[in-house]
Length: 115
Length: 108
Image: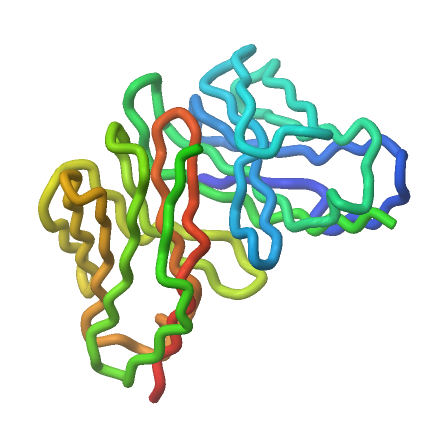
């Protein structure tokens, strides 16, 4: 089954404790992206990757890191989480190539709480 | 700063009516436009994509794009209670900008 998977689905952590949210897709998509969704602020892009070893900042990259060492995986790293990073996080992938953008497929979401 | 705007709603329509959702965007050079549906607590799912001016129909859904007016719309015909959700307009080049979403309620 074609899908985007995220783990964990729910996470409660404390301020400053490094964490990684994994994202994997089995559709051989080139484009992958991370979003956060907050009430009243909508979906905002954190980072995106056009292909392996190519990553770029979205609108809200502060406090996050990403890497794209393999085409299928795009982990989101919070080196020192803070309470303002409490949010619902979505990973998405798309068959887009440079200059042509196609629809994205979203993972199920990760609900993160930082206390 | 690129922006995408939508009527925040909530929009209420009776079952069987046409629901009309609107979206405007600020970047005149944008080329790819999408409508997603999101149920509460769930991930967004694609409804329609549109890349050229005009109408695109898929079942009960019609997307309309007017690049000169920087305007994208989604029409839902014969609205059903199961269409009750938040509808997100997205504009994608390399980055993706989502609108704030319009909450639709279809009343039986």
